[in-house]
Image (cartoon, rainbow, N blue to C red; front, side, top):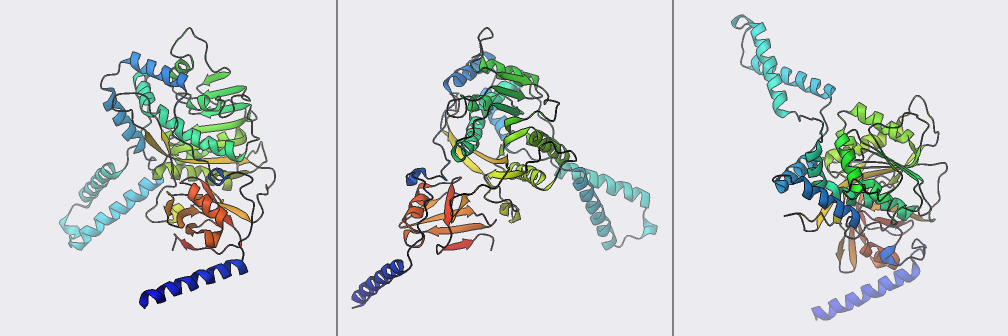
Length: 459
């Protein structure tokens, strides 16, 4: 009898749902723009990436000829160092911490009732000062610039060439997908290192047919030499396989010289303080006529460095403005409000991942994952209109696909983090199938007027 009642109730529920769907039909919005669900406009993820064959062969040749002793150990050590790299502690923060420590030590002395007549105050001040300095040395991150000689440059190539290529390729794919009409003629790569960006943009998968001038700027002479060797296939007598590439150790002086595309990958984290990073952000923006692409490690510090640059270019203004077109966030943010990730405690980075195939080296052959953060800004002249009734949220975590529903964690256009449970009944068949086809880093359509089943992650 209980089973019969349960079945009857289930049938009644299904009937009610069908009647509700017929009475309140889901809005029909053409956000697919003729694409299949698995390739909807918000999909920007890429399959496992491999280095171009010429680049792979040249890198293998250089590494083999260098004959670096204990190369796998050096790769492991450098990879860990670069991933754990933090921002240098600012002088003001250090002074505030010193004052706080000194106050804490004096309060401890007062609690044990040491009278001034019983001690030498000058000696005690000196002792407390030494304790403060000792504690600061013990607990403060000691930042130092990374200086690359020829051997360390080869180790860096073995450790980071493929991973860096994958991260930047994934970021640039955002522009390729969302702005197919963009065809840059000029490129500026700041902190170019091994010239990875040149190999990316000069490929036919990006803008190899349109680029006429590529300027690589890196203060490290040995790195520039290695980048040129890669372009020549590790053959000094050969012609570079990519033309119109120019290597410099300093940025072009004239503030009026602009480039269609400006990139800086894993570069801002190599600058010692906030002031230098702010000046670099302004300088790179002055050089930008269309898009500025910044990429950093997918760590808390890497993400915060990008948010510093974002705030600098959106909220501050230089004394002299050479291009009045304002900056707007192109990706990955779906808004220009304060990053909700930074409002959480503990702070977690907004990062993404890309699978890639590393160089063929001992203990270094399996498919790997590059975890990175990125920021793309563009100059805008007018507000562009998207599909009416549709906004796009960024998926900031892996999508969990379950029976007849999908869990999506997204950063929404209202600046809030939301946990959306997408179903065909509530959100429509198209949005449901798009959700099942999407993954971490893609964008998801949010149709206005649809009944939402969401939870705020900020509550």
